[in-house]
Image (cartoon, rainbow, N blue to C red; front, side):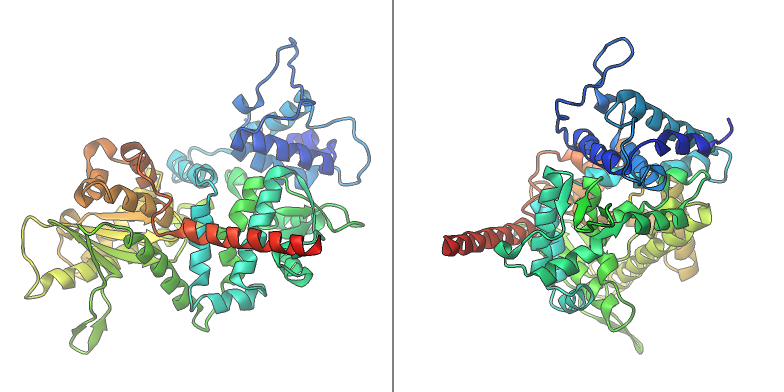
Length: 506
């Protein structure tokens, strides 16, 4: 099959951009959140049968549609005969995207299907992490951390609480309607126009600005479906040059992710102690989760060890329960874009090396601890090595897990560590959100059951999130770490203040 990108262009060029972005918002709300379409959307096929759009179109496909609309839809503002509200026009557009994606797939490329599966995981699985007060509170707690907050305020220009109040307001508005106004008065929430403008400057993009970024990043080969979508960074579109205050939110999910995990790209700075502050902040929120464990657990931070002239800090946390022990290493490093898209295997390998290094670091910690003369030699003690990253690396495909396994094995050999260390002490990699679920499970079940289950033959190849959701589906994760209380307290406080301000004006 030949790859004809012209078919994609032809399917989208006759559609008006503003009109299409609004329809896209409605379709995203339907497929992502189950919100029914307005009654005027009557999708009928050629036989007169009503079509349930959510059975034919999926959220990640709408993400690609939004990207391609920004590139090819008509931006003139002139009325168009064709519209995405029509089933025929929508089907034509979606079919063009589907067939081009199929045409450029290269199953014979090094990495083949497994590399594509890795890309698919990073394209689709993050959408299952739904926004909640716990998730918002986790990021609020992270950036409130004493040594990280100054970087936040310097880089973004507003304080942490103000940012999260604005984020809450904008995410709520984007979930209710596709259009908003940048000049909305937020003073009822205690936010002045200058602070609101500094917030919007981060997430609003003009059509020209977004389109230029998309052209720069475009890849027409087998990575076409998975390349970076500038709508994830500039998630609110200022579509009218004469009225830049008028905004459209085509992808509600993109607003949510941009204002939570995407904050990092606004705050990150080289040098000046940022890396340490960020790492300490991640360690802080993991520590808060561990505080939710019951008294049957012992959570400690190991004392620094000195070997000759060298001093070693050891693992970040050690958890003990009965005859089980877990050494925890917290890492702020996220899988970079090149590793997610993985245009070639080397892109993924270079990123996986970072994760392998973290695992090896923890193995060195464990080896020093267990080699001490006064260390417990109880043969019944079951030990786990855990690496927790702030964002989930989504080790979903064999191409990623096998690569990581090889890198860890090679690293153990080069380090001169015991050859059987990996067999005696299995390593587990969690994202912070997934680990929150693990902690919730451990409040009810023994640690050895929760962590050890991942090594059982029937769960081989499972990602930790799927394993936990399957085996410990009824545990309450929201309260682990108290992040939900942090965010709810902020929201309740601002609503109370807003009510008082409104009463004073009556």
